[in-house]
Image (cartoon, rainbow, N blue to C red; front, side, top):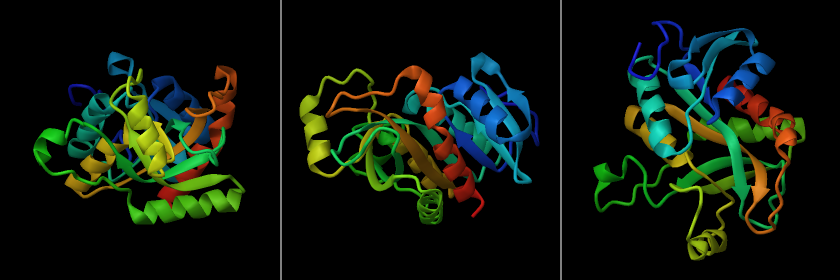
Length: 234
């Protein structure tokens, strides 16, 4: 048990999927895991452990933004020995060839600032995914016939962005999509020698203004979850 996770020793699997929304964690656990049981509900951040094709898996909410994710990932690694951590969540498209419901497999994640920025001082650390997970996720997407894109994303530290000029530069430099957590996840995985990846579903588009209706989002996220699970155990 930690400050933010009430799970007992052995309650957390070595493989952890991390949606931001705790209720998305509940949906994913009930939909994709066998014998899923609640292992954490401290501060309403739900975590569930079950099995997928006989493999133990935990699906645990991480909250919104890098500071929140940093708390949970630090505790999952240091106190529960999580080895493979895959973020699953929504993202905003930033390239014209990226469409709604497409899956983004994040190779790198750029950011202005993260909870780890103070460690590096003047250094611009380049957070990246685990290559084995990345390759396995791309293969899983192709096998399922899912339209996917592998490349760099942008982890913003704000939701209501007041920097349209920065978004233009991200787009100009080939950034596929924007979200709010992956850069810190990749940095923590590098620090502790763990495997990390972000597999994301495009739910809206910054250039076109398109967005999935809320009732369609859950239905569109199934491919993302299964790609993440297949990559974890490839």
